[in-house]
Length: 373
Ligand SMILES: NC(=O)c1ccc[n+]([C@@H]2O[C@H](COP(=O)([O-])OP(=O)(O)OC[C@H]3O[C@@H](n4cnc5c(N)ncnc54)[C@H](O)[C@@H]3O)[C@@H](O)[C@H]2O)c1
Image 1 (tube, helix red, strand yellow):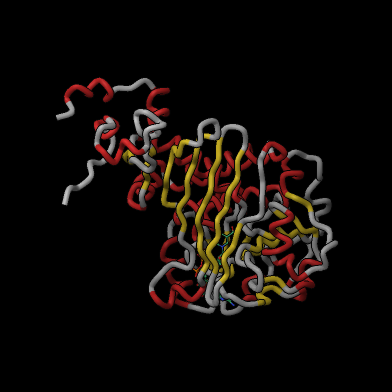
Image 2: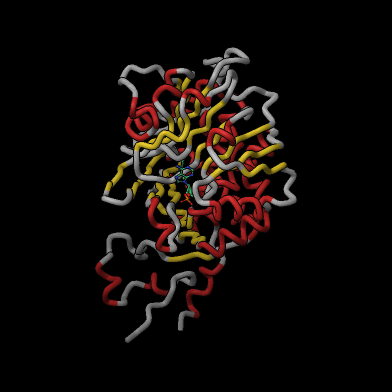
């Protein structure tokens, strides 16, 4: 019935963009994509993109994320843009979810063309969030930890933990993990998942035991409380602390004394002051935004015995970098499908015409046909 529109099946790229068909990547698509590329390649690829994008820091339109807090969790929107691309992520954080069989963190996001506002990619981002968080942490540790770091304590062995372990293996050179979780089943899961991946694994029975002798300490626990997972007495000279789980008002992992004893690095200072372990410190407590270390306007670690902290909360630019990586990979591998996320009438001023069926946009081959009752 739409034979007279068949010529639109092979539009020029520009015409395709004008039509605004959006690439959709659901959870299955993302799993397929990561399996085909391989997780190490994804971690490295996303880390590389984050580094390049952070080096253009002043060019980004940045804001602290919008957060809707509730009794057991938070739902957040994270926007960022430059002159060419806009992205946002929807992400939740509900530490009690796992007891009900749901993930603590779930996410999806969108990439759009700034010139026209056309949505280009709508993607599941739960797996992508784990990858980008681990890539960001490892990138920070590569610059902030001692270069000879080989042993990492991993406290919190839930959904994010294996990704952290593998990113630190590949990007930082970690060879030995000392893992602890209050839930022994989480630790057993991590040990099973990481068997045969080139990491020596040591199960510990306390945080203090895990941290003893470690070069790097990663805390990635989930609890909606002012926790003190890491206390000052556990610190050893030269340690690097990668604090991932303290990422919300009223939700911290590091004792304030840990921050006092360290040089503290953050993603985007206005956001971390509200959300990070930094929320416990006075407003003038000194911190350095990590992009300054990347562009070498700040030296990063200054001495082998200095304690460094990366107070990670997760910044929107990391998600844009990850979405751009995913978009490129999906396009190259032909993963995903086009959806009609937004209405695009043939005559853009005749939106009303869509309701009368006298707009031939309905004939566009990539539009899903409405199901008639
Ligand atoms: N900074 C970021 O960019 C970023 C990104 C994603 C997730 N997160 C945060 O990271 C944390 C972990 O996320 P996840 O998806 O792995 O959650 P998860 O619920 O799957 O795992 C968290 C683990 O922490 C353990 N835990 C809780 N309290 C503990 C304690 N006192 N000592 C040791 N272990 C403890 C739990 O038993 C659980 O196994 C969450 O707080 C989440 O909000 C941060």
